[in-house]
Image (cartoon, rainbow, N blue to C red; front, side, top):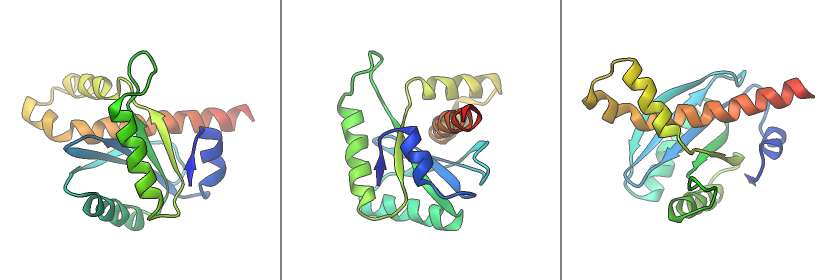
Amino acid sequence: MICDTPEDFAQAIPQMQALVGLDLGTVTIGVAVCDAMLSVATPLETIKRKKFTLDANRLFEITAHRNIGGIVLGLPFNMDGSEGPRAQATRAFARNLVRLTDLPITFWDERLSTVAAERALLEADTSRKRRAEVIDHVAAGFILQGLLDRLAYMRSAS
């Protein structure tokens, strides 16, 4: 099921299960996971994209191994809030993925997540080579943490 809002997603995810966050690129997929309490996102790995089936199989290995209860895809809006070809490709990926899993899927605005990841890596004095290796899954961590913060806010407001 694809959930259009964080509220729908919060209703769809099982309690005490972690989430996975994805930063979809044309060449790689950055992957981050969180704890079962849905409090802290942690960058995990970068998957080199091959074919959709192979990419999905690797994601399902991660979800099975880590007891994942939902998937968060970074949605690359344009800076003016409109959706371009990359956002359409992300939505297509979600439509293909939802046919293969019962896990709820939602989207999170990923504008500036890569910029934030790059800034964090620079502040940590990470070498250029190492930044290139980890930027995608660090960006996935920012995407997932954004949704986790929203879910925490929703819980505290109710």
